[in-house]
Image (cartoon, rainbow, N blue to C red):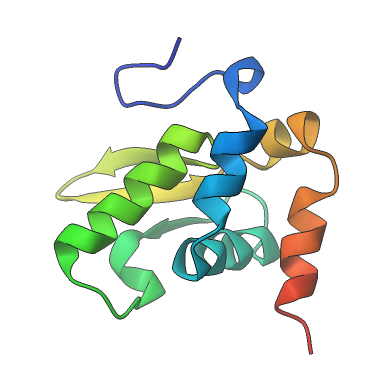
Length: 105
């Protein structure tokens, strides 16, 4: 059962939901940037500089969070997002490597 913030347990992560979250190129960009950063990197939503409104940005991060791809925690007046690298690799081995390769020349 997801926690109060909507983060599912690793065992509850569903392939269909993860793939639906990654179908959007902006959400793939977020996950790819986190996947290629050092493990444990935490970034604010605004730091990704996505060309969308604040409401749309909130929606994109909610979809990623509820799919289980990221974990968001409140830090003062902002939310920090980190990749759930270990959980994603456990459930879907190689997925993050594919996403990282997509952004390589």
